[in-house]
Length: 182
Image (cartoon, rainbow, N blue to C red; front, side, top):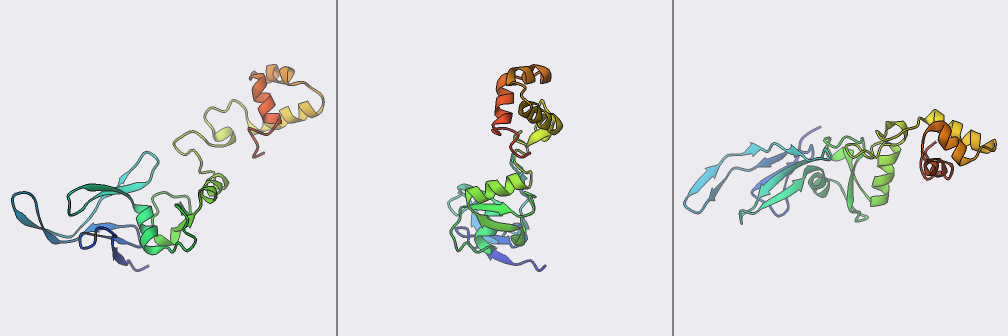
């Protein structure tokens, strides 16, 4: 895939972004309060936020730094947004794969559905489903057993004692408030 570059909107003649997710500072003559000097073109090294997304800080002509998520700027410059959606989704679920063909504009609902269907929810924030959730006290097998015992007539209190969990936990399982994916 050929790398293509575009000026970053609002930072024209200062920075460019590529369709592969790279950001570079352009060579130019700039000045600080005391003197003019020439900067050479260089690739910026992105940092990673707590959620795993790559970002950089850009400094404009007014010397104010602007925080920029790379995936959003790749999407803004290289991915059409005809429906004017507000969220950028990584199709493969890899937050550092910012190649334009891996990005798509989605609604909040579509973004959440994609995350759940690809088991991406809670990476780093403990919202994983089922047994993958660190705070889960039950296995999928036990949840299925609980539902079967209730169908056979056992009450919630007895089941909760048998599995050493709170009565409300059993109630939420039976009402499919929790463990609704099985």
